[in-house]
Length: 165
Length: 385
Image 1: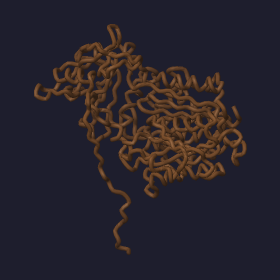
Image 2: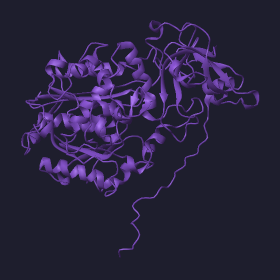
Image 3: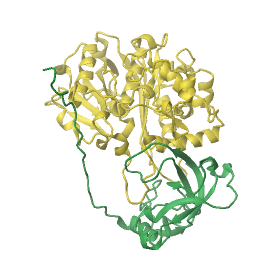
Image 4: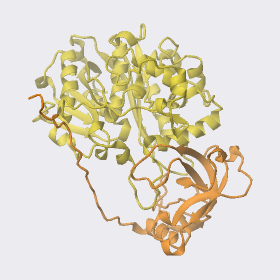
């Protein structure tokens, strides 16, 4: 049996899970805004932080966030990482800069990518703005923002973003 | 509490990249049988089984607990699964302990596992809902910005993470179950390993492991009669918080601080660094040792890195951390939290062999998961509480 093939010990069988996503009122507002180059968050009432993207309620209090508030497409990098690890479902070329960006007027930071910036110039507190997809590619999806790019403005002092994560 | 709970049996598998010699049930059974042997018991002596593993997308096997009853001797008995992401090994043990403490069951078997080689956990972590961009490549992609923020806030020297990684990788050489035991590992090797998610290097990251961990728990009278001295559960605590809310501090999460305070209050501990002899803390990326020292109250805010620098967390330091080599050396995700508890219990039972802390009487086990949002803790002791 010396010329017998090696035993098969494992096989790769890809699995799929397809589903319809029902956006609900809060995400519908946000996704429709993106198709018009607008970033729409929500808050429970004036003076409270604006949730972007909105999820329908304030996670701290479970109060409904029924008031829609448009926030700026410009913001501040509150943290970042330079990613050099490939992943099948990530559409960016390595290395890329993953930023945690706090938009002006928003009460929550979120992840996106920063482009058009040399890797050694990325820093905490830098100002950035959304780079929108061309008109014919705008959609009710976060893909309407292709990436963020540097804004020619002075950095925000670290003390002002110290607590944002 | 109606009853004291003692850990009377501990079983771990050898952690490895691929355990193709066993199925998932076989892997769990291996750890369970070792725990039962340590306890001098058989499956017939067990009243209920509590299991835990990371989310099902990590292996692509849905509801695996449904077919584990035979392998774990649970036919005709309560079999319960706990879900709290990467902290699940800790919270699973907490639930099992509470069943004994509440007087519901006399003896409970608890098992946690992961068989990462059966699928791609990084894929399972990178799902793409339409309201967020897919930019976070695996757990490291999520945690790297938090580490960056910690460094900026604390002013910690850039090599703090390398020092923790070196300590844990050297400790792993003393643990026969550890997955990674890297020949000739030194500061330079870690410093020169590829940067994956800046500032996290390859050798500052946990591996993907197959493995299972099991514990047999018993109420006081039964634990008193166990063949090997039990580790007594002094206190457990759990807290969680959402991944995002205004004002959230994801570097030093409120849920983590509250869980620690609750734990120390229940255990009657005033000064954790002085009173606790050693701890097994969930550190999947090296910098989290410094960060969790602060959350756990072992160091003031902004000074956790000094414990790493001063050697306080080394095996011969005043607060040894991850004597087993920790998650950096073995990461069967769902089991990783229970491994922390089991290793803490082994210390106070005097079972830790080459990585034993001399005279350890009180030890802490810690697990965290999700986006630094789920926390499970326990304190175990040689003496009854």
